[in-house]
Amino acid sequence: MKRYSIQCKRYWQLLMVGLLCLLFASNDLIAQSKPAYVLYNSKGKKVSYSRMLQTLSEKDILLFGEYHNNAIAHWLQFEVTNDLQKLKELVLGAEIFEQDNQEALTQFVQGKISAKQLDSSARLWKNYPTDYAPLVQIAKANQLAFAATNIPRKFASLVARGGFEALDTLSSLQKTWIAPLPVAYDSTLPGYKNMVAMMGGHGGSNLPKAQAIKDATMAHFILQFYRPGSLFIHYNGSYHSDFFEGIGWYLQQQRPDLKRATITTVSQKDIHKLEKEHLGRADFIICVDEDMTNTY
Image (cartoon, rainbow, N blue to C red; front, side, top):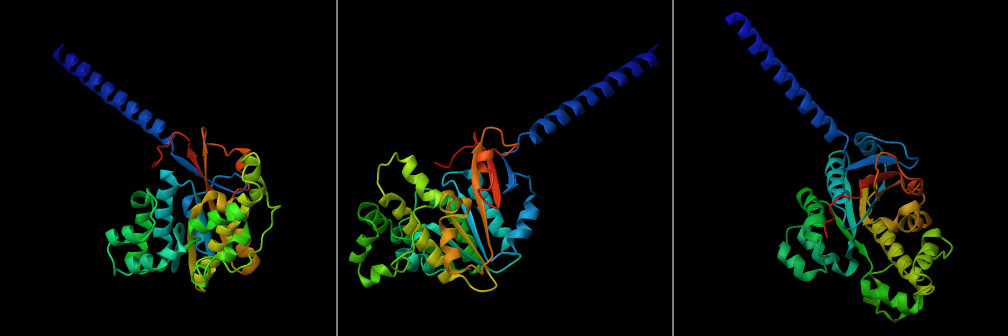
């Protein structure tokens, strides 16, 4: 009887262990079915991170399109940059830095000024400390050039109000901070046409021109800083490179020989299948759960 009791006790112990194992396994499966993001190629086929990384390492220029406040996009920018610098020489650049702040940015990357001095010298975005400072730190730690590619925003505002002609009022020094004038412009590009449509016609024909001068300037300084044999990674809002337009269009006009790749960021409720509207948006598409916390 005693032996029987011991066997029963042992049986129930094993049963409880089995149930606990099943419970933990079930929880693991649930967790695995709730990824924060999925990577797709332009055709909507899922692709691995390692495959994407290998493809990117074979390019000359990467336009990394982000949602400015998306935590996953910024985390992947850091991871991709950190991994690619182990495979190829890099040059970095970003929309958030305006070209007249280039000197301060370079001095910081070279260790000549502090982070506090950079903050007081450059017009940093409010999410710079969390979202972009880690990228600048990669450049600093690995002695990489970091380009301030964007037009000073006040000059883009001039174009929004008065068209490209408003830039003729700039001084010779100020014109060195923008793309050479006159800039090429194709008002029929879908991205520029959609801007007018989204604004309901408000802003007139000058609104997409303000976007175009940003695109043209960023492309210009990407090419100014690009070094043969390297990979230039540029961080910009996704609208500046989606559907291979914007910055990519200007790069194509000037250096069609350079091999380019694009990444974009999209947000969906269900990330397990890419929605049709996102097909063809970029070479690689980061599809993020729409419930993901934003950085601001």
